[in-house]
Figure 1 (cartoon, rainbow, N blue to C red):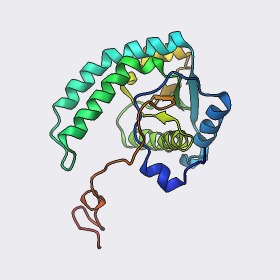
Figure 2 (figure 1 turned 30 degrees about the horizontal axis):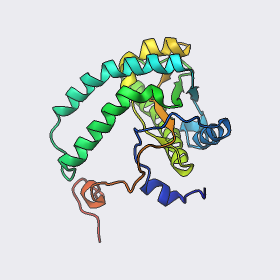
Figure 3 (figure 1 turned 60 degrees about the vertical axis):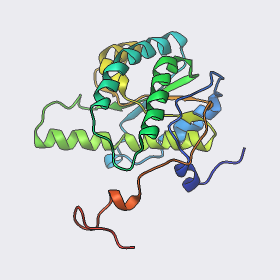
Figure 4 (figure 1 turned 45 degrees about the vertical axis):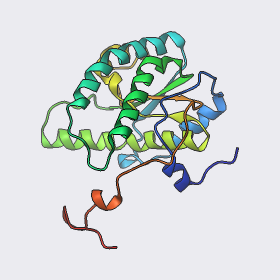
Length: 220
């Protein structure tokens, strides 16, 4: 299969929550992880680690914890006001697919769990330096996560970024054998898609961008 160009990849990289159980070859996973480490990171520290979970028992336990947290997350999301420009039908589809993922995530052939390696230990506190350090480190992992999603799309794989497992972070850290200075940042189920790719639907750029100051419309 011919690989997609970067702009076509971005414009069709939907969150795919319906995944087939068919195995993903090791060499394909290696290409995805190679794309991940091509991402930028603060001060070129590359403080990341990627755990590929294939073990059925581990996947199932993570899914059980994820499912426990899903109802609380869905309830919280239901209290948010409607997002201008996003239809109720679109939101309903997202809720259905998210619930499907919560029930069937363990059926995906693998998870990729991006972790942040805190060389000096986890950052605690709300002071200026702690806030800067925390946000800088987070900014150094999520570009790699986006590379994972784009690489999956380019290779014809489905994937999505989710974080509900963080409600049970300590237990999952124990399952994965993480050292104290390493924390999971998100979870990406990966598999061959059982749903269609893009095009992705987004609100118009002009409604979410400004020139120089908030509220100043961009030209054109």
